Length: 268
Image (cartoon, rainbow, N blue to C red; front, top):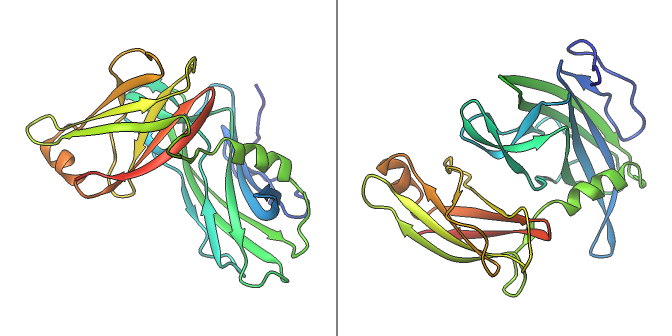
């Protein structure tokens, strides 16, 4: 087990990086570099979070407990757009049920589009996140990094590995992909039943569902994977919570050892 030093401690950084910011049981920094996308180099940053052994952090839908990470880039300069991506998470048990997130280390890829491509980008991030072991501890770090106009490979390999773990948009003929979604939203136990289609022989299959407006319960598998098909149930605790998803876009994230994908669908 490594030790990250006292809270608030920082270590020296190189060009295109921020110093590490120590948060007791974790430390975090900004990295940057060019990542190839569709045959062209794209400017990326990455929020690299390391945790001590046994500690975990949360996905955008944290599950039954915990808090999702929050990224505030409002202090940045020469920025047209910033898009944060989430690598595939996994579920794990905690004191309050099932949580969704990451352990040991995660890099959140960040695609950066400058206002003026021939000038440096100054990134300023307030990163709020929770880590848990037996208890959940809230953390906050203020990070800054300057991405030069002639940004080279830098930490592009590290960020590129994280980009490869981001679920791709599902296609009509690709696997995994979403099958039928049946909504039973009336009554005291509103439910979504979801069919997921995976590659034959896939393992570590799972489904997660998120919404930008409401917290969606963790899906439960209704049986084992059979012939590439698996069914899940999402049960909402109250009629009000079930009614709240009507007309809202939901993101269905399918994961397996053979790939991952995401589909956005609006339930009636």
